[in-house]
Image 1 (cartoon, helix red, strand yellow):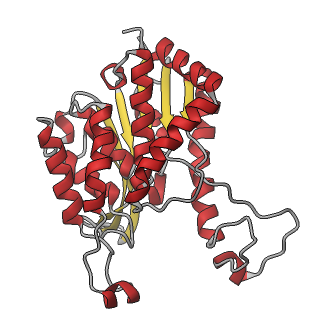
Image 2 (cartoon, rainbow, N blue to C red; image 1 turned 30 degrees about the horizontal axis):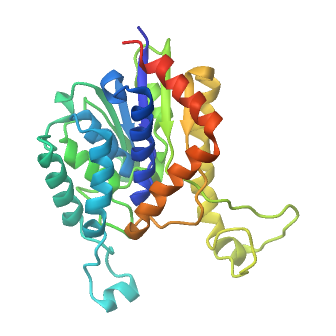
Amino acid sequence: MGKKILSFDGGGIRGVIPAYFLQKLEEVTGIRLAEKTDLLAGTSTGSIIAGALAVGMKSEEIVNFYLQKSQGIFSEKHDIIDKFLGLKARFSSQNLYDALQSAFQSQAADPTIALSQLRQQIVIPAVNLDNVKLHRWEAVVMTNQTDVSLIDAMMRSSAAPTYFPSYQGYVDGGMAANDPSILAYASLEAREDVALLSFGTGYTESNIPKGEHWGALSWIIDLDPKSPATKTPLFTMLFDVQDELPGQTCQMLLGENYRRINLKLTESVGLDDAKKIPELIQDVEDYIAHNLKEWENTCEWVTSQFGER
């Protein structure tokens, strides 16, 4: 019998999008997808979803985590001078740690379990700021063979620079692999008959008109209010293009056995904008309503790939 993979992108509070998509899929198909899955992969906020599923939490409980805990996680901790000068990370790691511990334990799940003790395979990327042997930063992929607890792995992968301080010398896995799908596929020993379902956290349209000639300043910060590009086009483009490659690679390798679920956001939503979570849930509802045929095809694909066990 083939291997099944669920993969979740990074994206801060926009993690509620894949969590809610998963809930809606399970409502339609009647399948608890994580129970049918061999490998769970997640980056940053996606690592929280993957980790929660790995210890038996349900999709609706994960959605509630975003609804109930996000405001507390993203509450400012520094005075106005620190905030203005950017001297410290904006939010406390302890807020996130406490929220994870509380949410998991309320569902009788143990976030301190070692990755090696998880029933399923897991893949969580992060960035090590100082490899003591190489004296350089490096991308790392935490798996069941990594000597680390689940909560520490999630904290490492979620330590987004400027938002949170580094955690145990690690920062956000999204710096290296915001979409961990290809890492998940590569981590399998046997890669025949694999089905991979990948969840995005939403995107906004950004483009530079053909023939536009920009200098260095325009690439770093776009001051034109009518421009279709974002306000930091170079950095945004680097992350956006990086996000596309794993999916394109999985599509080439897996063909019809790969499926990606994502949506265009009605507006740009910051990683920490917790007040927008209800709107993001509505975006998912609107996407399903306006793309009903595509949604039905996705549900049929999920039933055929994950409903056979």
